[in-house]
Amino acid sequence: MNTPQLVVHRDTELMARAAAARLITKIVDAQAARGHASVVLTGGRNGNGLLAALAESPARDAVDWSRLDLWWGDERFLPDGDPERNHTQACRALLDAVDLDPARVHPMPPAQGAHGNDADAAAAAYAAELAAAARPEDHAQVPSFDVLLLGVGPDAHIASLFPELPAVRETERTAVGVHGAPKPPPTRISLTLPAIRAAREVWLLAAGEDKAGAVALALSGAGEIQAPAAGAYGRSRTLWLLDRAAAAQLPRDLYPPASP
Ligand SMILES: O=C1O[C@H](COP(=O)(O)O)[C@@H](O)[C@H](O)[C@H]1O
Image (cartoon, rainbow, N blue to C red):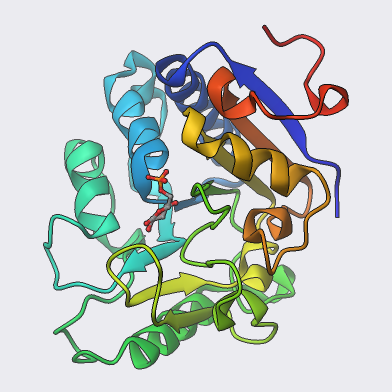
């Protein structure tokens, strides 16, 4: 596990704009190096804030959107098009406005779709889709994502891995159904910690004072079962992108020196 790097921005809006600029650069660099890039999206306020900032950035035209693979870290298991689905919200924030290749966009299956209301079957289908996209050099059952984005909940959940629920203990499967989530809706699909850790870079986004306790807990040595965010790291980099409010309870020795 690599040491997390922290960046603290003045406020939520600046954090979203800076994260969007960072993501554009990352995608452009990966496309220049390999011809394509892959990003795992997250839902929630900070994930959608980043996408909205990216939509507004003039630099978004530097990305070749047709060579970008998009995956999701979790989904609220609701019918296709439901306004609470992470996929629907991402489409509204950005995806509808850029020229993606539909074959490279991989939303998690909806409820009332091919798997009916069976979230476990839908998760297994997503795991199979991930495995089919993995190449031998990935050495994993998922592709080597360039960047995997995660929001951090006030309870330190990431994706739909909530403290103490079975999904956060999963060590084999890459995507699982989640039942009884404390945040609505109770039924969800989530990537697991092994899938998250296969990413080259994991970026955790947290803004707002309601996130301060979770950020401090996850970065102060808490276990991943109690604080799932503590178990999220990338193969080559783990980056926490915060605003001042979310960083407010960090121990002084963890606070980045160059931050306001
Ligand atoms: O429900 C969810 O919540 C988390 C955190 O969202 P936030 O609004 O507290 O930032 C999000 O990362 C996840 O994708 C989503 O399904």
